[in-house]
Amino acid sequence: MARVTVEDCIEKIPNRFRLVLMAAHRARNISAGSELTIDRDNDKNPVVALREIADETLDMDALKDSLVNGLQRVLPSEDEEDAAREERSPQFEALPAPPVELDEAEMLKALQNDRDGAPDGRL
Image 1 (cartoon, rainbow, N blue to C red):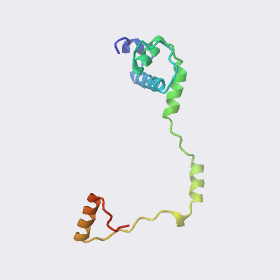
Image 2: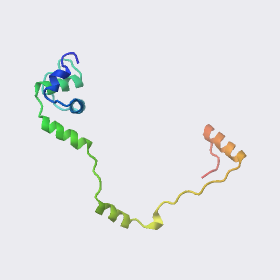
Image 3: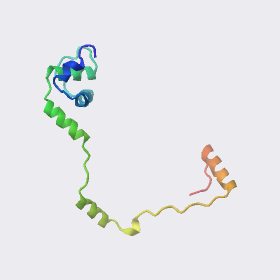
């Protein structure tokens, strides 16, 4: 960051954590093909993103909304979960596999076969 310092950007976005999130998000957008609002001047994407923030050439509200939308997780509502539970039938739910009883010799053979990649006849 030879041409841009945090002090240049911190005036625009006072919270350093938010500044890092916004600059990183903008740098990823640039990597994905987003149009630049300033000349690149042979700078890498994070530096370009910081320069755009410092020069106020970005719509910061749109960038913030894009960042928030990218980080959001859509959780199904309780009604959707209840409907999904009702659709599932108990007869089709997965049952836990029964434990396999092996003596010491069978266990050693199975471990060696697993190591060698050979089938041992277990299901």
